[in-house]
Image (cartoon, rainbow, N blue to C red; front, side, top):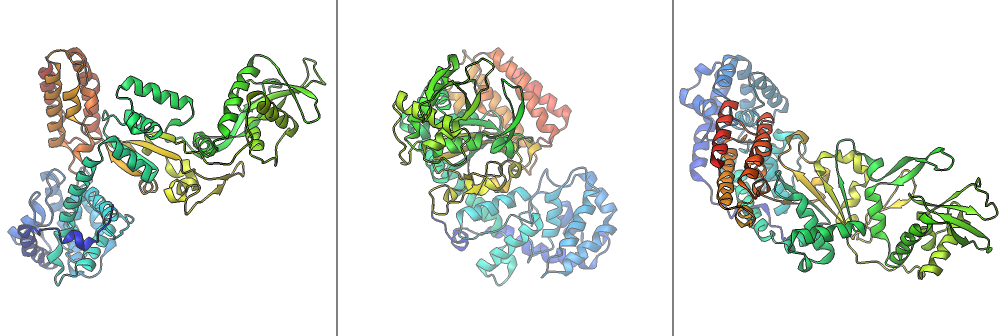
Length: 607
């Protein structure tokens, strides 16, 4: 995608003159009243109503459910003597932001509200700072604008510093780019640009809905996160993408069962690995760490350096094509050694026997000591691979390792190592990626995920692993696909370190999936479609205004039930409990009694 300048995008916007004129009419009056009036009763009634009392269609920013309640307004007005000195300072300073005063005002108002009315408080400040603060008072919307400016324009702006700092940076960026004679003339541009870029983004997403487009997105970025509410098919889509990446989208099975069968085959072939992030996952488990190892014979406990799933798949993906025959030979040899001791010779021709009891080592015993009480020694499988690639440094029990490698070459026709790169693709799927503590899991390796930092790329970076002291990098043929549940408010927003290294693709709840489902009993499809519409309207009408309804709509898979009884069960025990959780988390803003009335209507719809 070719980026355009911010000014080019702004030139595509038709200014909303009604909003602009209202802003220019009232904001100078807000500033003058705040400078000179101590009590709110002293303010001009019309000006005070526009400044504080009005929620929607206000001249700076329209707020509805996110604004102060009637009781909260009364409490704030009763304590106006604590607020007006701060408003006075803000109004008197039009050239330099007063960060400490902004935050003090925010803290005081919070003591009089039942919820943190951030957007409402932000609007009070924005109403007095036309030169310093933008009119986008919803913090989520402002973050969205910054992300879209960084994505679609040649400008770049930081997300650091909180809403006041970000709003100030946005304001100054537009002033610098558009160079207005009066800063008030451009106050509508930030919000209008956000809406314009959202339309562009939606159009692009529509074009990318086909699997080929998603594959192109993954191949271009190497890392992708699928976002969506519960039931939008994120986990299945990761399997679909992984199979399409490896086999080609033109060979993707149309049948779900066939697709999952192929997916499991690729997992068994170690081309796909799957893990789920959680709060306790750390670097030692995901990358490499010391793990306890109990010797079967001596029962002695020792600690061995063992790879985690990420390092394992990176090492597998880095292996060259000639490694495949060795890996296949090792797997066959493991099975053979699991049943009987296999005779192998070392360099001098002395025989020793080999067994395999699981894990990453073969057990070997010299035939000079065949007594049952004789001691077994380990021959590390990774050391065999290391020697095969020509590196014999620091190999423990090197005589045994050499003997096993020669045996594999002779008995299983393993050719000499050839260092030619493979085009095989490998996929790591990370479910619930935003549940993990990213800095604790990846540590310094987070930078290595970037496309141009991969092995063989222009800005290749490798690091020395802290435990094994081996050089480690991320291969360019490894693709990472994550999922993120947008309805889970308990885990907050995704780490910015991940956000800037991954492409994002949103999966929405899609009524068309319900309409095209062909396994419904007679009459059930119509009920499922009607229930879907009712729930969608309910969420849209009662959602916290700081949130996006599309991110929280119940997924279409909840409505794919063959029988009416199944649909009733799904509503009673899955959909309604999820809506109740939404209410507890502040996602749905409705009294419980009204919510229960709505639940009864849904149940009656299915009776």
